[in-house]
Length: 505
Image (tube, rainbow, N blue to C red; front, side, top):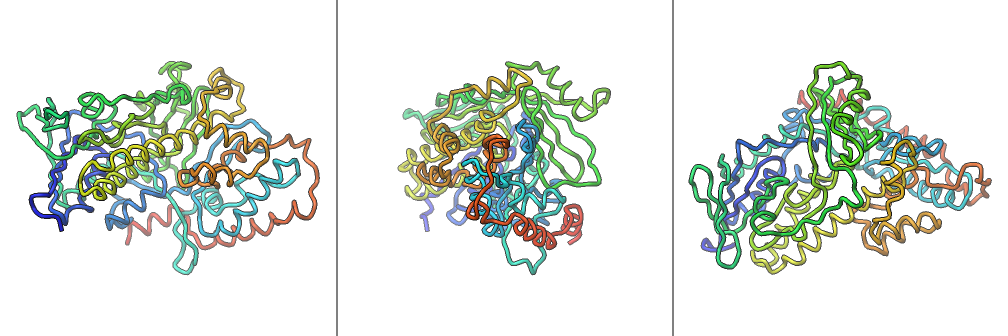
């Protein structure tokens, strides 16, 4: 147990989902040590609220805090997410759409068949290489089933969520205060520094001075503390991730409530469709270098059938990249203040969670000092780079030719050495899992994710060049695999029914 005089004062500047996630994780981890955690939230700064989808890590976050799905999902209009369907990113026949699943334990039976077939097909042999046939989550999404099995199903599943980000932030604010976090409403007007460059205190517009040992910067793209005050440089990803803007439009919810995010490639970017219980979230992420905001809005309205509707659109700008140091002096940046990688794979909250948990681990390991600051920064930077590379891969391997945007993405050679090695490995027909293991990056995106991406685009020899295979090439019976998956699917209820049961009990 830490002695009383060693207890730290943590000041979180900025609310939103990132700020309140940080507050909850730190309070849960350190409340028994007598830490004083205070969050300052400006009433003048709204929540961007674009990220309305998650990876499976959010369930781990809720489990750590002891929050049941019945406690929060209904309050945040949340739905289940089996994965992401990508539409029209590829023009290869038979590969106009594919699904990126969250893995299930049942995939231990079917995934080896996918790995084998994708390897054999790259060798020019005619076997089924589309990922959608091999994964339980793909089946669940296709049939609009929830990923929660009945009690007698002996296999684990992984899943994410869709949610209203503003409501989730409010819910987490309440939870954090239950854990003892102090909530202060106010706008920071001034930042005071110690002689050694550490942050001493922040002063609100109301004149209150708030001192602390550690300051958490959750002030969004402005990055008031880390970038503005401590002058930590920002590294832009603009040379290989072109998108820097978005336009958002809600639509009414349909009776057929989906359990997946849908990402559809458009002329100068892509559009998301996220099902919530009360509405559909829709948006178009695009590059302002290729499209004006008016053109982007018109394109999204045309897709949604809202050209003549009165629904108001919201326009956003994005600053894509990361800071060079996420923890500098006594300040840690979390969320948009540390960086942003466009929302294609819904990684924003994942990066928040990993950053905060990584800081907690390193701060504790160093006996609540900056001893492991370098290790922490290297780890977070590596995660940002790995996520960026996976996202860049979606654009680099596209085969669309309908706009200069897609042609420039396909010809963009501003790629990391890691991504180049992955793409070369695939095109040579080598074992991709071995390459990911060699680079030690499969814990960021596992082999299944990379295989689904590359196979899902149809990066195979042209079908006319494929040859019949021998017994080894056809060792996996696709009919048996799909039959196994469909029989597993009988253990899952319709998505809307499962959500109704969750709300009822």
